[in-house]
Image (cartoon, rainbow, N blue to C red):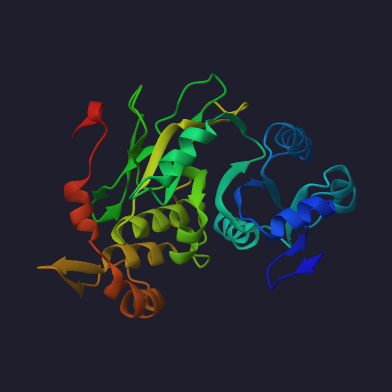
Length: 311
């Protein structure tokens, strides 16, 4: 067991052959399973992943949820990341990215089924020139209906209100989406860390994902949703995000909307009513001002909508 400042790490137990192999190679994929359902769902899911997905498995949970000693004995090939108390989705995913040491990582949840994972197609998309920073999963409900989980940028009376779209049926490859809904998807680990992961000072899964997605685009990257990756809630009819304005949400607004690019030059324009002073000073002025390739208003203007839903 190892202790970081935020969580304990119970590492998987590898045989000697596997350890020697790991010293000389980088594994391609890690899977981060967020413990969001019942203990029974987690065990059921874990057993399935161990049997069907021969990749490095990481479970992210919290103290008191599981008997870690018993789980380690039952699942020797699994690493457990244990937070002392309830943690935000972004914190959990940052932990997976920090610990997995793989080229890519896939984020799933224990109350979801991984219905489709076309590894060859997904890795091919991530290997293309100008590949996306992440591939967002399509999500289905208990009736196997695909939810409208494509997102496009939109401002409504000065508020960030991304619009929802259904994926285009039969679309090859991927379609642009503003962020991965519920942060579910396949991430390029090196790029994720270069973009500095999710903002842990934002106390909302939705605003963390939105902030990361907008940052990707403004720094010159994309996020794509693809039918090669599909997850399903087996016991949910509707799939709804909590978009309430939690602590730190103004950090998202400040980073997304405080810079305007005029004639190729980035200028600070405070977005009145939605300014986080710390984010303006530490993020916008010190980092983003010099790095942004575009601004949110250009993103709005040039966004490519799904073929069937042009505004």
